[in-house]
Length: 69
Image (cartoon, rainbow, N blue to C red; front, top):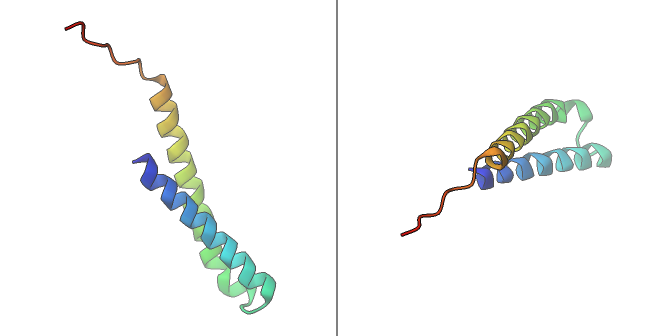
């Protein structure tokens, strides 16, 4: 689950990067990329929050007991 969420975070971050490049190059007007940038930012924030929560839960789990058999 964490690996898939990490991929989502990477892709959202890369989308933001490309939207910024398009805006800076003036190939596309900023208002045309604004919706995508807002959505990618929201997806990135939700994904990072989920990853953080998942990692905190994993750290707080007691270690598995080892069998003495």
